[in-house]
Length: 171
Ligand SMILES: CC(C)(COP(=O)(O)OP(=O)(O)OC[C@H]1O[C@@H](n2cnc3c(N)ncnc32)[C@H](O)[C@@H]1OP(=O)(O)O)[C@@H](O)C(=O)NCCC(=O)NCCS
Image (cartoon, rainbow, N blue to C red; front, side, top):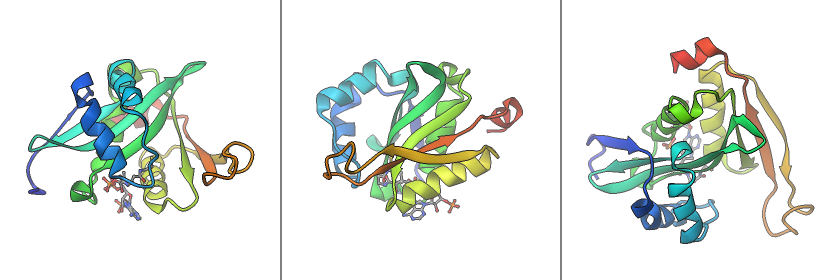
């Protein structure tokens, strides 16, 4: 993959479902979901999800949705960047592009969950919070024993926001 070739960023369509299923599977420690789940992301949640393609190959993907009882908050479910495209700011760029979508015009905060050991994810979201000068609050999300029956590391809940209007215009 030529790192300098242009990257196209766009809302997912259903025909991306299988490719993004493969991308997520190739991006540990992400938990793969069923293709059916990915297809729902590309259809019901495509306005709050995003794909990145380079030379026809899917190299980036973020799945997200507006939290049903708090639609001013974007929940970022998974972020995946193919190894060949990492370290070029692609994940950060996809997050920024998501927030300027019409579906996110009223979004005032972002939430995600992160395990203690995922340094890349922690760095990504810390940088995102810093770039917006937005408060970052970390609390217990899903606990290894209470929620995962010991089968998965605990997930911290990261809440970033509120965004100020001016700051969002600066993205
Ligand atoms: C996490 C991931 C999406 C980052 O993608 P990326 O496009 O390389 O990230 P960016 O280039 O936008 O980097 C954003 C910041 O995070 C930092 N970062 C990225 N990967 C890092 C790593 N492995 N260790 C430490 N910091 C890292 C970058 O240095 C950058 O900060 P900087 O500009 O101050 O240097 C990618 O590594 C990935 O897909 N990992 C596997 C799946 C995963 O863990 N997803 C996140 C959980 S939802």
